[in-house]
Image (cartoon, rainbow, N blue to C red; front, side, top):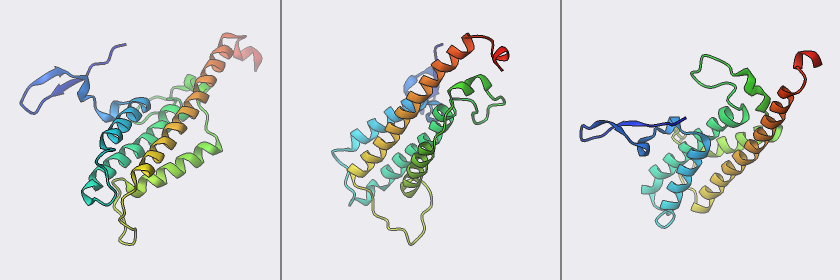
Length: 174
């Protein structure tokens, strides 16, 4: 399968095949993590938590992390069984879905942390400090580690599920 993205440019040109214009919403978790990592790396030399002009960068980055946490549930934990705006449920993908208590705890902690700095309207009583660069990097690392661990489990379950399906007919076993 080959994916191509057709873009409309600000100068009026349209119908241009341009992978650099791929919409965020269409990206999988791995691609999203790569984009976030690149954004953070580019900002490393100039970021300062004492510079209020950095707030829009922090909001954008944490919003992308929060959306990636959400997408990881759909893509990795639920293994694509259910998807937003899809009219069907991919029941055969259930063989790869797995949610453990540690997953819930990681998602809860990650989403809570991201919500503190993402695009949510904050209450007056919440301190307005920006996170240190190392804290942002640590939050991204936690997300990446979660995805890697959950995706490893998903891939193992996928192999085991296919082996089961290739064995004696499931109806004969049940």
